[in-house]
Image 1 (cartoon, one colour):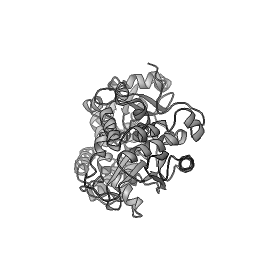
Image 2 (cartoon, helix red, strand yellow; image 1 turned 90 degrees about the vertical axis):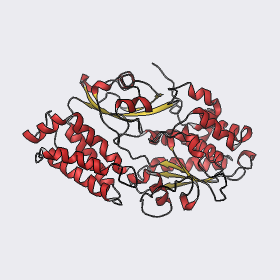
Image 3 (spheres, one colour; image 1 turned 180 degrees about the vertical axis):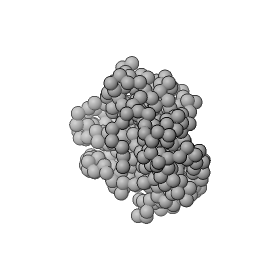
Image 4 (cartoon, helix red, strand yellow; image 1 turned 90 degrees about the horizontal axis):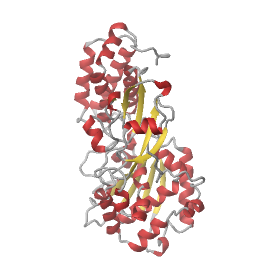
Amino acid sequence: MSFEPILLKPIPDDDQIDVYEKHGGYSALAKALKEYSPEQITQIVIDSGLRGRGGAGFPTGRKWTFIPKDNTKPVYLCVNADESEPGTFKDRQLMREHPHLLIEGTIIAAYAINCHQAFIYIRGEFAAEARLLEKAIAEASTKGYLGKNILGSGFDLNITLYRGGGAYICGEETALMTSLEGGPGYPRVKPPFPAVAGLYGCPTIINNVETLCNLPPIVANGADWFKSYGTPKSPGTKIFCVSGHVNKPGNYELPMGVSMRELLFDYAGGIKNDKSLKAVIPGGSSVPMLTGDKIDVNMDFESLAEAGSMLGSAGVIVMDETTCIVKAAYVISRFYQHESCGQCTPCRQGTLWMYRILHRIEHGKGRTEELDLLLDICDNIEGNTICPLGDAAVPSVRTSIRLFRDEYEYHIKHKKCMVELGPRFE
């Protein structure tokens, strides 16, 4: 299947506003402001079926409607550009190559929710992308797409770029808001939900970069056009971030529902060195592993859930037959232990114990009874924390044991991997 990307169009110098305008940039914004009311824009997005592209997959337009109708406070829009999930790198490419697409989508979303101050919260390590966005904001302001009375519509909007400190936890929406307010990135208990009482106690909508980048083409072409791609329950395209043991790792924008086999073999060039597929994490490090025999699963929210995993952020981590599953789980657990904010005991202690036990097993000091202990720890973390970070640490460990327990037992008994590996992590 050949497919012409919509968001990741290969347009040279598209970070420059003149080039972006030449290819139709900001025409969707002009159409939104001149032809539609905020309520009509919201309805178009609802009708399109656009679901959040950050991981949860919640209907975007429906989320906007949660702002109280009798609200008298300022409304804020926060763009979640704190992309930190291992295996996920789509938003970074969008910001680097198409920053004005994000700016235009942000303005359209702000118009729909009657917001006059938006924030782009970008991961601290994305220095180059931050500079490109600052430049894009300045160019858009000069051209009249930002500021007072945008395109003569009477709508005002300012966008402020805020660079985070590199904490994975700040990708969680309430931690993001706490960080924006100048505090440490600690998640908040919900309710109240951000749409009711978010940033500075005011109604706040948090949308992901890829989600907002879908708005200009939806407004320009209509809800039915968007629904012509993908599946009935997962419409549109999705950017799949393919990494690991493939010949052509990278971002691939394809219609929702494409099969994993097609994604990996027709686009990502197949498994390296003609090895067999052992396992895959289809939605970033926070979703359950699948074994290689699930390769014909369709890549959409519903199909992956039926297969026992999640679409998540669509970070497709590919592991061939030479992969040590124990080491893979150990490396992932180390990430979550390091990134836990420490606010909740189940996450703070649970991720630490998972990491320590996996470290012992990986280094030849594990005991068989620790496998069930790991599963017990997973059960005690899941559902017992303020935010989803603890829950995110569980799936890779739990499914690696359930699907590859024999490999763990071999590791413990023989104090080495079932497969030949390079140097171990120390």
